[in-house]
Image 1 (tube, helix red, strand yellow):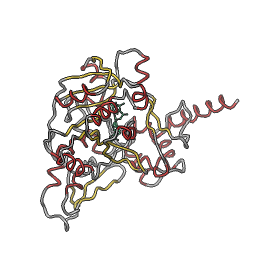
Image 2 (cartoon, rainbow, N blue to C red):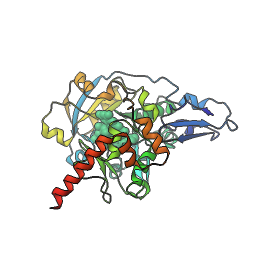
Image 3 (tube, rainbow, N blue to C red):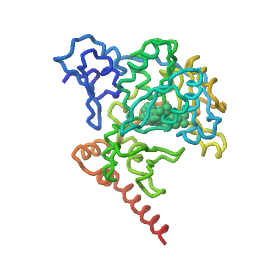
Image 4 (cartoon, rainbow, N blue to C red):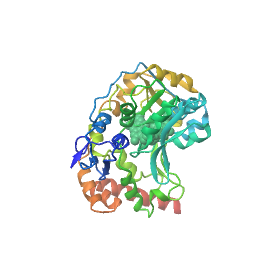
Length: 367
Ligand SMILES: Cc1cc2nc3c(=O)[nH]c(=O)nc-3n(C[C@H](O)[C@H](O)[C@H](O)COP(=O)(O)OP(=O)(O)OC[C@H]3O[C@@H](n4cnc5c(N)ncnc54)[C@H](O)[C@@H]3O)c2cc1C
């Protein structure tokens, strides 16, 4: 089997699929890893897939030239965002200036990318989706928009931002924002988790992954857990069990970044508790374009100690570690075992503690 990048190291950025003139590449998702497979009888050896692959090429890393923490001044933006609302405020200012924003949406069961130029449509980007999103088709679209003289802002994961740069090349009108990233699981893992609740992604109108520093899945129709217990998808996301293999060697998990602006959470911030509860974002600016994005947006910007911010955000230091339970987890998942049963087998103490907590919570809230 011939693959574009090293076996099991594909990040699923889909740039090779988009660039291939012969439609000879498909990305295979086997839950624990992705592979970009080349159909050799279709391949004309043009090498475009390798040129665009973010895994095969070394990106240009830049040290931040400016760093700030803070939040969106508009209360509704801050409130509907995962952290301090930097992303949404920057996106709003960008479209106000006549630009187009390209970012991740959850629609019809898919985590895909969409381009928006109207302020009223931007709310669909809000919120972190803790899953591997699929940028297929977006590269061609961005290039078309840039060629037509439009300004484009791409907001996505670091590997996706690197792929955009490889595909597009240098364009004055292209602005890139990457998120500090812990790692991403295949959306199929989330789909298998939902099966335990007799549901599926295609049925859900919306799915929230987090409310400020309270990490957990939320949906209007499904009660995943009682409030004092974390759902098992979020638990395995946060403890890094479920990411695809490439994430444990992520080259973007460092202080130097590849995009104009990097956004994350200002963990370890010494701002008042009352502000922390509402969410505080962290911004690392690598270029003048990044500074422009920050300046144009309606943000409350506060100084931050970069060294401390980096120390408190593991993903600015190194990739996530692979837990020893991961192999067993995926073996069982691939054999079709139920998600909750797998958690019981891989994390028995945690599972039983959660059961007891759930029982006591229900007892207390019934009588
Ligand atoms: C998988 C993942 C892991 C993360 N890990 C960390 C971490 O370890 N440390 C840290 O400080 N921050 C992490 N973040 C970033 C954090 O969750 C917030 O997005 C960030 O703090 C900015 O918050 P915000 O309020 O400005 O914007 P948000 O409301 O979070 O919106 C962020 C923007 O990112 C886009 N986006 C959301 N999910 C995805 C996705 N899956 N793929 C591509 N684009 C997406 C949205 O469309 C939106 O434009 C992670 C984000 C993701 C998606």
